[in-house]
Image (cartoon, helix red, strand yellow):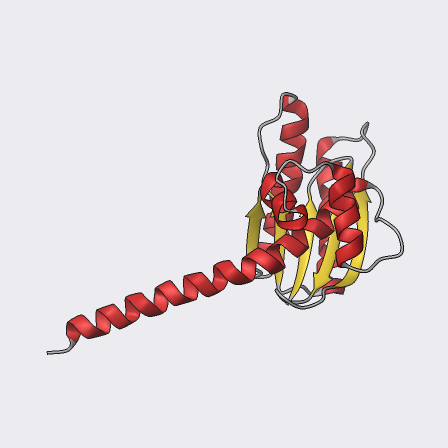
Length: 180
């Protein structure tokens, strides 16, 4: 499975793609950051982020997209920009019919490091180790995007199998009720 992770932000939007499956070694496909100048008009910034995400989707061809779930911060301006960039990523993926998963920061940290309150250095160090990289991806937004992709591969696969098992059990129960 190939997953593109998006760590949304207006100034720096982390992008990363990872390939693999739960229980097997993972491999880096691509990592980077879409940047927009803080002084630019919000519309122009969102269009630039959209163009970069679309370019990545064309190049990476992911099976799914994992986006960091926006959480409440004390700085309303920051959370609004993050939410807007997040929406752009979700729309770009949905336009292509790609499944989108939202993962909270603590869910990603717990998945990658085993500790939901891990700091950025711990997450970056584990991403570096898990992907067998020579150096930690920089800036932290890039490492966070890779962490999102890894989290989704590990957790998304389990969630998908659970959903399939529940659907299969419901279908079997429905079929059994219809049998005389």
